[in-house]
Amino acid sequence: MAAEGKRTAGYEGRYVQGFQYFLEHSGEHNAILQYLEKVLPDEFKRVGAGERQMDVLGVGSGGGELDAQILTLLQSTLPDVSIAADVVEPSTELMGQFKALVSKTPNLKKIPFVWHSVTTEDYKTEASAKGDMKKYDFIHMIQMLYYVDGCAETLKFFHSLLKKNGKLMIIHEQADGGWDNLWKSYKKVLCTKSISDYISSGDIVSHLKGLGLKYEEHPIPNSFDITDCFTEGDETGELLLDFMTDQEHFHQSFTPELRAEILDHLRNKCSSEKDGMRMFDSSLSCIVIYA
Ligand SMILES: C[S@@+](CC[C@H](N)C(=O)[O-])C[C@H]1O[C@@H](n2cnc3c(N)ncnc32)[C@H](O)[C@@H]1O
Image (tube, rainbow, N blue to C red):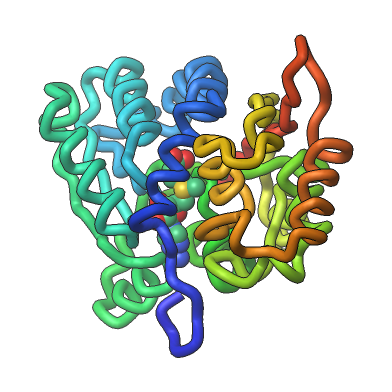
């Protein structure tokens, strides 16, 4: 999102604070990790069969918590294979956190990392200009395709970077889940900052079909408590709302009528009651694309 008039990646300052609170509160990383622990060992054995080195690319890796787990799983699944990692992450704040995580994690310190502090769009431009199309065994894009310009083009480009047996794994908000419902219903007012056109896993699958790529899709169910969002003045509720709606301050960003409408929508269309809490449907989808 580097071109004139385009939005920034947005993951700096208060937005990072909201993102981190969301991660602590939502159980999203745990849900993803539990799923990955079940499926990745076999996937890595297939992809790594006969390989002496596995080249892994993380795209939009954020603070690297999931990358760290993926690389650790790869090390334990294929202990005799050497691993090299590239990371494309435009947020300097999150990239800094990722580097700090690597420096304090003994098994990760053994892996050579190449850090690309750019958006996917700039990565593609730079790699094309240099003629340096490094190929990868495993590429992952976790919760990041919302922010790219031209989803189909991006999928096509990263797919072209796969080695013969490689896989591209996308984890993304599920079609018809709470996020899809919220963001498509309020597209006009929400798609004005870092996300210019919300896409769900359903849109990604349509692009994959259009590109004629072979893929598999699996659900990753998750939900989290948004009860605090309905208590005006609750600081953590506001931080969560800011992240969920991509606003600096939810209560200052919209008119009282629109605020009430969005909150009502969150309560009645995107969440359900469980043990006295409002649980937001934050189900995800894992899409694994073949080379
Ligand atoms: C929701 S976070 C996900 C981070 C990490 N994958 C995770 O699941 O914890 C989205 C990430 O995409 C990055 N991002 C935003 N725009 C991007 C772009 N155009 N190209 C690559 N990454 C981008 C953000 O900086 C952020 O780290």
